[in-house]
Amino acid sequence: MRATWSGWGDPPPFPEQLPSLVPGLSGRETPAVSLDDVELPESRLPDALRKIARTDREERVLHAAGKSYPDLIRLRSGDASGAPDGVIYPKSHDAVLRVLEVCAAEGVAVVPFGGGTSVVGGVEPLRGSFDSVVALDLARIDHLTTDRTSLLGTFGAGLRGPRAETRLNGRGLTLGHFPQSFEFATIGGYAATRSAGQASTGYGRFDKLVLGLRCATPAGDIVVKPFPGTAAGPSLRELLVGSEGTLGVITEATLQLRPLPGMRRYEGWSFASFDEGVEAFRQLAETHSAPDVARLSDEQETRLAMALSSSGSLTDKLGKGYLKARGHAGGCIVIAGYEGEPDDVTMRARAGGRVLRRGGGLFLGRRPGESWLRSRYHGPYLRDALLGRGVMVETLETSTTWTRLRELHTAVAEALGGAMAARGTPAVVGCHVSHVYPAGASLYFTWMGEREQGAELEQWRAAKTAAMDAIVSNAGTITHHHAVGRDHTPWMTAEVGEVGVEALRAVKERLDPAGIMNPGKLLP
Ligand SMILES: Cc1cc2nc3c(=O)[nH]c(=O)nc-3n(C[C@H](O)[C@H](O)[C@H](O)COP(=O)(O)OP(=O)(O)OC[C@H]3O[C@@H](n4cnc5c(N)ncnc54)[C@H](O)[C@@H]3O)c2cc1C
Image (tube, rainbow, N blue to C red; front, top):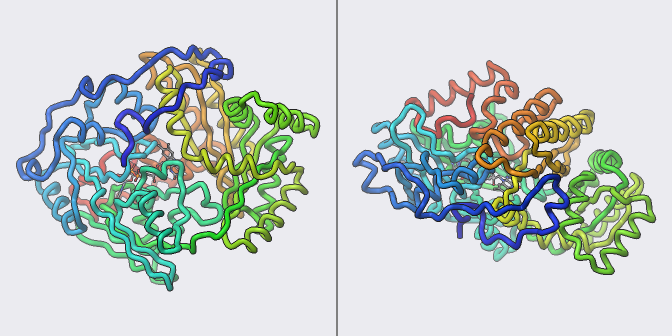
């Protein structure tokens, strides 16, 4: 299964209460054009590749963009002018090496393509200095072997989340990696972007799960052996993880697994304010009692989520009344999820609960947690419904230390709100903390406003630029888990410094001397 070319999948009905929550929203119809009406340029592949590439309309459009707001706006309006000239599905590591050899000889750019769920322009088929570009879709490289004794799994890069989990679960194992894009994203994509899943506070970010890698580069193979620990110089694993297809194609990854949890306990909590919640989360980190899933929504996100999920039922009204009576009206919701063996889960939930209660948290029972767990992959479908009704909806993410977290939160929310208001399209800006570390946490922003018909990309750029500038000047990373792609390259020098960029460029020049690998991404 893959996402649709114009979005994610079957959208739910448009939430009719939304226009009353987002200022100025008209909710007018803005459907996508039909696939037949999407404008495609002629394919310009050299003969050597034409024999092995698919060049039909559907394949080229499906590989023409990722899933960011600007990607979808362009495609839905019928613009696939940058579509790849062809799509190649190699079956093995050696087949990937052969394709790279031909592309380097013929001067064809190569975009490694996993699930195509990048939200930072990572799979945009830019040609760089070349006339043509191919998308290299890894879907056919999908093997899996496990070593139960060492809790390791060796995965083909094209394996998608659900298939990988089903196969692991059948062996009593799990990877524990559940990003919101889980349904379509791949193992290779996770590794290439340093992905973080919803349970990464407990299971660890994807970059921490990778022990070994096999990577096909235009200069030849690199194999990183899956040692549990090594002191053999700077880590090649760290260089390849997060390389976003600019150095080579990750064809296989050896990953740390966990036994399938015997119990899952998900709870809801409420805090009177975001500040209180942040401090309680800091305490969770400091006392090593953070749950595996730790999410704290700010006031705005909580208000929006509650309004969208409200059924107006008696239970809803009683719940709101209870929060009001306890001084938590307009407060912030927390989801705390614990996974593992039953005794361990009970003990950890008790320890975590003590910290949350001490910090001012109000226990809301398991229903909110279980409801979140059931609906955790629904967001992207709702986004499709919003895109079809004139709504600009976009997200971005960052992280910083506990010391700077609150000022970063305020600065980015104000930057996004200010940039949207300045264009006459005031927005609702919500945020949540979703990954907790000893030194700090992530912040994930969502903003929604009326779409500026015909000037969507300028509107998006104004908001994105304001937010990124605020991030950089308030000690945030330019990306916590979405990666750099095309969209964050202007801020990469601010992130790693000029010499840092030069060092990365030197590595690229050695591994990819012709510069065919994913031009225009990662490096400014
Ligand atoms: C609705 C939605 C929700 C999301 N939620 C999350 C989330 O919770 N957490 C998170 O981390 N991210 C999230 N993302 C972002 C995205 O899903 C991740 O970046 C994911 O890791 C990308 O995987 P993919 O297989 O789709 O890679 P793609 O989008 O296909 O590729 C991403 C980048 O990696 C490169 N690449 C892909 N495969 C390989 C390979 N085998 N070798 C070398 N380079 C490769 C591509 O060239 C590109 O630069 C979300 C995206 C969407 C649309």
